[in-house]
Length: 217
Ligand SMILES: Cc1cc2nc3c(=O)[nH]c(=O)nc-3n(C[C@H](O)[C@H](O)[C@H](O)COP(=O)(O)O)c2cc1C
Image (cartoon, rainbow, N blue to C red; front, top):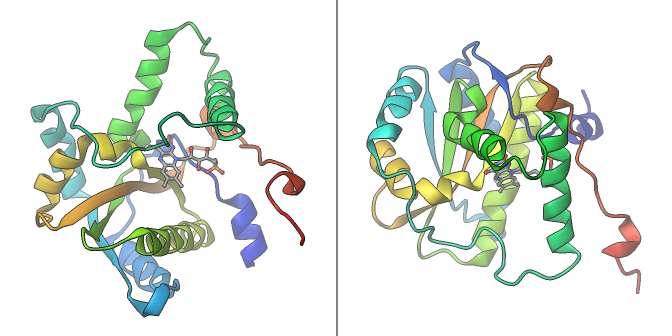
């Protein structure tokens, strides 16, 4: 598989098969992903792996914790303008359409959103933290690490879903993984084998045409 194929094939997987992923696979994926660039080669990523038994324990631990923490960052900008607002709206509509959930069916929407809390059935996950001293450039570095990780996962036949969802349960996750106070949770990534039969995995997200976001000066 070449890079273009991996970029094209990567998608947010929202239903996984339960088949396990070995720690060895995750270790090698992470080591390879750490070839991602970072300003000054600072390598700001701090990653916690939850897999196998610890995933079982996390699934038992989460219901014992408050269902929601005040997030430490805004998932989207407050008062978000166009075209961003419509992009977010559109992907939501498209996603619920794949599973036949109508706009007014708040309960079914909540139930699907709640699947975040079960990692969409994934057997493995990683959590990306950043030291609180880091600034915007290092958050971007973390993003590059994550995309590299997700592309390498595709190459190894695995699917992923980045999950900022965990920013609303950051206390539970920080406690569970034992992250120190100076580390802030950015997001999780659910990892596993793609359930190819799941309607939700037929979602192919759109992108704005290049002319809308590129200026050749
Ligand atoms: C940092 C980050 C956090 C995300 N958080 C979530 C999340 O919590 N739950 C979810 O279902 N999708 C999440 N997504 C997936 C996005 O919705 C998805 O990337 C976008 O709609 C484009 O679709 P694609 O990944 O299939 O190309 C996240 C993506 C990124 C990059």
